[in-house]
Image (cartoon, rainbow, N blue to C red; front, side, top):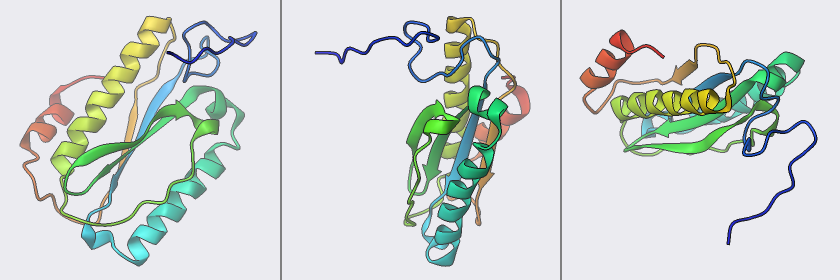
Length: 157
């Protein structure tokens, strides 16, 4: 049975996961390398940086209303660690390092997720800014990145 939730006064029905639907929004993906080469200090620094990023960005009132963040990691495969959520609701992360560097898969997943989020904004009638994808990596891909490279070069968001 689906969970029932009362809609707040300033919240549009069906707008779970979006704050202030009448404000323009921006999808932001943090695309993070968690391969084995990130083990030790690099992964600890990455975890701290992501949590600091949330803390510092959340100080901006406009960002709180407009920025939706997703976190994707790539190692042997790419996966969504945290799906799009309003910036103030972003949960602290504790990533660990293991495996290879499926960077191409990660880039493709990030592009798919921002396109999906922009379709969501359009369905809500919410204007949106160009999405941002921040990729943090210390290595070279262990998978084929040619399709991802083409998508970056030719696909518009």
